[in-house]
Amino acid sequence: MSLDKIIVRGARAHNLQNIDVEIPRDKLVVITGLSGSGKSSLAFDTIFAEGQRRYVESLSAYARQFLGQMEKPDVDQIEGLSPAVSIDQKGVSQNPRSTVGTVTEIYDYMRLLYARAGTPHCPECGRPVYPQSAEQIVEQIMAMPDGSRVQVLAPLIRDRKGQHQSVFEDVRKAGFVRVRVNGDVYSVDEKIELDRYKNHTIEAVVDRLVIRHYEDADSEEARSDRTRLTDSIETALTLGQGLVIINDVTDRDNPVDTLYSEHLYCPYDGTSIPEIEPRTFSFNNPHGACPDCQGLGTKKAIDPDLVVPNKDLTLEEGAIVAWPTEDKAGYYWQLIRATAVHFDIPINTPVRNLTEAQMHILLYGSGNETISVTYINREGDRREYCTKFEGVIPNLERRYQDSTSDYVREKLEQFMVNRPCSTCEGTRLNPVARSVDVDGRTITELTKQPIVNLLPWVAQLRDESQSPLSKRQQLIAR
Image (cartoon, rainbow, N blue to C red; front, side, top):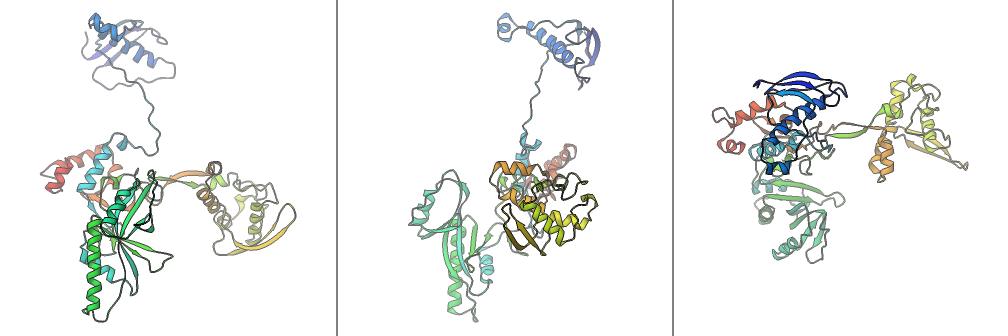
C-alpha cells in the first residue's frame, strides 16, 4: 500500500474512460476540466465512494445497518486510500451586509477589542478625546449668548423598542414634571402610549432656564444662576449615566441639541461623542452604521451613461431615455425644449456633438439661473412661468428618494448603479467608529488587510515584550 499517494487504476464511473491517475496524499489537490469531463465522477463517485465503502465495511454489522452500504465503484484498483469525507458545496448568503469577518464572527472580536482597548479621536480634528467634568460643561453652557433659552435633558432611553411605562413612572417618582419623547415634550401626568415594536428615545427634562450674563460675575444673581445650572447638570449626568443634552430652544422653530459627556470630549472644537461600545463598530446597527449609506458601503447613484445610452440620437429623437419625449405635449419634453432655447442648445444635433457645458446643464441643471417655460397641455391650455431647471439627474434622484411606490423606484433603478459611498468611502461605518484606533490603526484599516498582513499585527499585540498596549489592553486583546 502506498503511503504518499493514492493510486487509481481503470476508473470507469460515468464519463471516465478507464483512466489511471496518481494523486499525492496530504496535499491540497484541485481537479479541473471541462464540463462533463468526469471531475465529479473521479472525486465523488470513485475515490470518495470507495473510501466510504471500505470504512463502512470495517464496522460491525450493527453499525452498518444505520449507515447504509454504498455500491462498489466501477474501478479496477485503488491503493493508498483512507476513510473519506465529502463536503457539499453550499450557496453563500447574498446578504449585502455580510462580509467574511461577520460570517466567521472574527469581526465580533475586533469590535470588542476596539471598544475596550481603542483610543477615540475627534472625528472633526483627529485629536484624542477625553472625558469632561460637570464644571467644564457648565463653563461651555454659560458661554452661550445672553438670553439663550435652554432645557437640561437627561438621556434615559436611547433608540430602544418598548412601551417604557416603568421609565415614565420612575421619572414621576423622582420629582420631574416633564419628559421629552422622540423630540416632543410631554407632562409626566399625561398618558403617554408608545408602540412597543418601534424604537424610542426618552429624556427627562431636569431644568429649563435662561442664560444670563452679569457685569459682576460674583453677584448674588450670577452665583445663584451658576449654582442652579451646576446642580442641574450634575443631576442630569447622574440620571443619564454620564451624558447630558442641552436643548437650545431660543429659536423655537429650529431647536438645537448639544450632547455633553463625562466620558469623551474634544476641547478644541467642542465635539462630544457617545460612549464607545462594540455596537459602535457594527455597520448593521444604527449606532455604528454610516448615516448616508446605512452601513451598506455603497449607494445607488444615477449613471449618466444609462440616462443617455445612445449618444447618436438627438434630444428631439429621445436621447434622454429617462425623460420620454415621444409626446411633444408632455411636460418633460417642453421643459427640455425651453432649456435648450434658453441656453442655445441644438435639439436636432446628436448629443455626442454637444459641448460638455451643454450636457452638464441638461444633466445637472441651470444652477441659480432661471428659464422661461411655456407649457401647452393636450387641451391647448397655455401657461407661462419662470423656474430654475433642476436637471435630469437631480430630478431622478429626488423622485427616487421621495417615492413610496415600489413600482416607481424599480423603474428609476434601471438608470442607477451601485457606487462606493462618498461619505464613508465604502467603509460602512460612521465618523465616530472610523476615528477609534488601536496601535495607530483604525478598524476600517484592519478589515482591508489581507490575513497574511493582519496576523503578525495581532500576534504583536499579544506578545508582552513587543505589544504597544497597556497591561489592561493586552489582557483584553487576548
